[in-house]
Length: 210
Image (cartoon, helix red, strand yellow):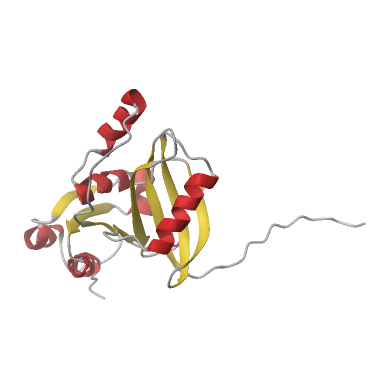
């Protein structure tokens, strides 16, 4: 007796995850766009019970932006948010991971607002109702999300974090249980114009006793 099986194999790709995110008008023009980079993938975060961080870029790599714009055109994105992910495998070299015709997950749309001092929700509503096609903005800050897990022995408590970095902290809140495996039990969102500041805060939040 012969047993036939079907397999779907995907190439394993090692690289840093970058996203290209934003909002397109009804003609596919980008009303708003930005990019983020991630400490690791969601699968590793969930399966290995890790904490995670990701942050927005003030300057988007030209190769990433060009690839994102090509995807917008190819998928005929119109009048909606989008979230695309790529592996950066070498400088200026990106491999597609996924394309989503939706807002990015978690608190990322809030991070749009914090990074640029805008209200993306109002912009989206005005796009749908009034066909708004322009949004003056600048990427004033790198905006970062850093999570913590309850089962990790962190070196610095919540009060220590807020005392030291409260002036750049824009949100600190517990995460609903259904999302905690991916986004942590506690999430901190902070911003700074300097990337060195972002990494200093990440290291402080994620420092453990062992």
